[in-house]
Image (cartoon, rainbow, N blue to C red; front, side):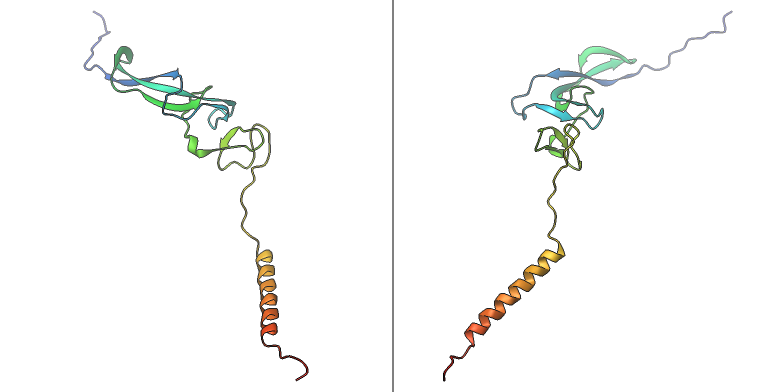
Length: 147
């Protein structure tokens, strides 16, 4: 007799995704030529992909779809899904970089941010305005000479 017993009590069913590159959908923004991927750290193109849900039986993909495909923009190299609203364009090389970056990954230029007004500048403006008010009040209440 054999000590080997094969018993299968359950069968696994489910859905998995197959990802494929597609042309730009008609209602989406254009693909980006230069893009700094936060996942693989390469400068590549941002292109469109489609996730096709496929039916699986015991981890074997079958040719039956089990849902509607979803479209997204992602890295051409690693297919990482990106949100285009979380990126800005470098003013020098027009590469897409993450908004909170301080330097561009392509050209190395510093990303210029809007800075608040310093206190020294605001104090200067206040003092300057006080002097102008004092001069205008002196002109109003000045008595003519020779009386």
